Length: 94
Image (cartoon, rainbow, N blue to C red; front, side, top):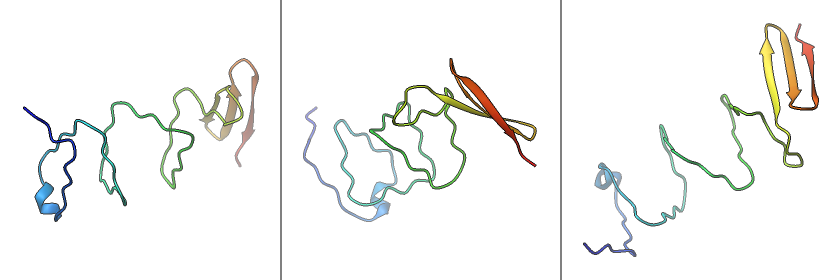
């Protein structure tokens, strides 16, 4: 089966109400609006901006200028910051 690698599709959203499989790169011009996105593997270049919600970094957050992850934890009213191999500090919320 020959695959057309230079197709361009235009039309109303009713034309695209089924599953679509791509075998090459997909270039989008404009916004991609989704209710849910499931990704098996995601690689991001240099930065991610999240405007709201909960962000989880399982191995800690790493700043651009550093390579040591910092873990942020909450235990009751105590917020704890810890850097593996360096130490930790905390403060109490009142």
